Amino acid sequence: MRFGEGVYHCIKAQQFSHDFLEEICDLADKIRQIANTKAGMEYLSSILNHKQAMLYFVQPSTRTFLSFYSACQILGIKCAEVRDPKTSSEIKGESEEDTVRTFSSYFDLIIMRHPQANFAEKIAAMLDGTERPVPVINAGSGKDQHPTQALLDVYTLRRSFSHRGGIDGKQIVFAGDLLRGRTVRSLSTLLTKYRDVKQYFAAPPEFQIGQDILDFLDENGTDYVLTDDFEAVIKGADAIYMTRLQDEWDGADKTSARVEIERFSLRERHLRTLKADAVILHPLPRRLEIDVAIDSDPRAGYWRQVRNGMWARVALIATTFRRDRHILDYYLTNL
Ligand code: NCD
Image 1 (cartoon, rainbow, N blue to C red):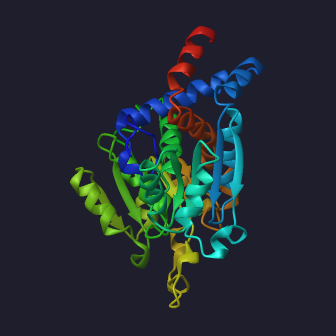
Image 2 (cartoon, protein in one colour; image 1 turned 90 degrees about the vertical axis):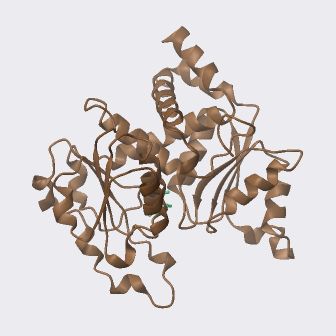
Image 3 (cartoon, rainbow, N blue to C red; image 1 turned 135 degrees about the horizontal axis):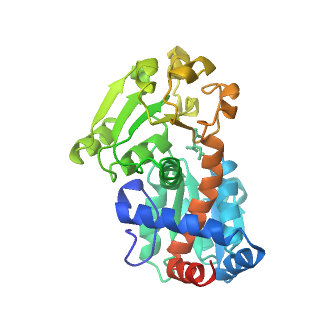
């Protein structure tokens, strides 16, 4: 399951080390430079043009789907997609595990988004026991994990703080629906790999971050604050990570309707209270939690974050197929 041994699966944020994160970010920066020229793009698209990927996305997605799709194309990987399991033999009573195992026979990589928390992990473990243990990348699993989003978030933070000593020592505020937002859960986990990062969780009590994440932060000696006072914590923040209400997970009790989520929204009037060099992030899609007027503020980092996502995924996929050295050699010779 870990990078560095056997098949490279990317399942959850806990598996990444600090060094691995730094390597992926460095590689993504170099890939971007290589991609600046036609010759560079031609080189990149030749690296894995003998490989095929299946994008198994049975939960709504357009941006993450396209981000992975574009990342594969940059590396020359051919893609096929499964978006609706109703069109497959599952309708004939086949288990989803059998469906994915069958599909894996045609592909060299499975990129998977699924509503079930541990499905990608289950598939990776199952494939490891077969004669074709192809790598699995988790592109979002239920309310639990979104490791590649966290990777691109770290990449964005690192670029944002490149002239301010990097991520170490920064104050990061997470705001919104932190209980059901998987991107926050994965990013909070990854930030424990950096020194003296203080994490602030600003949420309504009903949607405060899960105890399992707080236990993990405790185990790793990470300092954190739980609050429902959004306006108070954003003032000192180096980064503010906004999220939307995840009301697709509401049960019959419709908790979301009873919660005052507007109190955890970034309004234009807040801009003058933020640090001059703060960065505002959002995994998108956004609803009303960030005023559109904020988009033109230099601190709005969420559009850059999207672009960074594609390059971070190119770096991850290249590393999954152990082509990272190859790319670094090309970089040293040609740039
Ligand atoms: C997020 C997700 O799917 O968890 N979106 C994404 O991948 N960029 C966030 C969300 O849906 O709110």
